Length: 332
Image 1 (cartoon, rainbow, N blue to C red):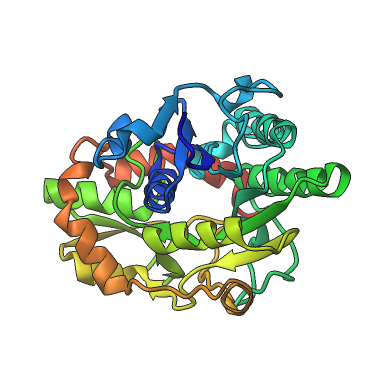
Image 2: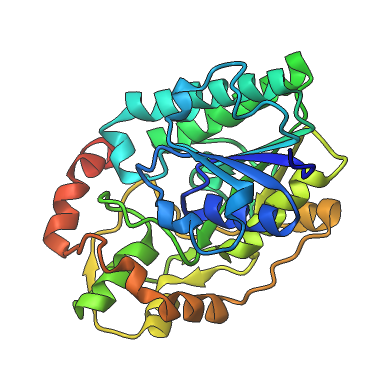
């Protein structure tokens, strides 16, 4: 029987989750991963020599038992699992609520019964809606679409378990994570996945609006470090915003990737700029970003073949995929 401490990572075969697994293995933990592989890839867990310390359970989090053996004995639970694609949430609100809220309840109950020392929830900055910037943790909550609402309600639920059941919970509101192993799912979504597949195909980058909109991009290993620190800190009941604190324009991303551009209509309900005020997480956890935007983009380009099987989007297919979005979120 291993004497190494145990951590559980839901969504651990996915984008951020697999980097979290890497971090925990490096820190000397055994890791149990719960991932139904809808958005994740088993290959994301197969690149290091810690196989003996890693278990993958291919279940939907909604099927977790309150006394699940996979969580029993865990010290830390990092909850990344859920549906992450934003655009389809407008058409599938029930599925998003079921997975991102009720699924979170299942993980919370398993963590509570296991007596974990920390439960860290992966929240979304989309809860702030069309926010003023830089955005602090005290900013008003104003979700603009079902994905944002579902992630926020998952966070509210986690803190309810903290309040009622004394489960030690911290939450990190991620702004715009990017990096290797980001999603290649069929849904139209994150700009990096869309652009990288277009670069491989030699087709123009489909830039939304005029490309001057800015996003607070943070490289994924910096995200994993922040979650690790949130797991081992003595602080509980905390919410932290997480970004680089240095927004980059989509035009700057295109410049670094290199290629032609075609413009598609800007989507209603999406901010012109996301910008995390990161003073709180810097002060509380001693965390700061380490990977520059330029270095992060280069790391992705070095592994661009990963996105070869991703869907190739064009202005026409994007228009089809976002038709319902414009229908419900357009001018009222």
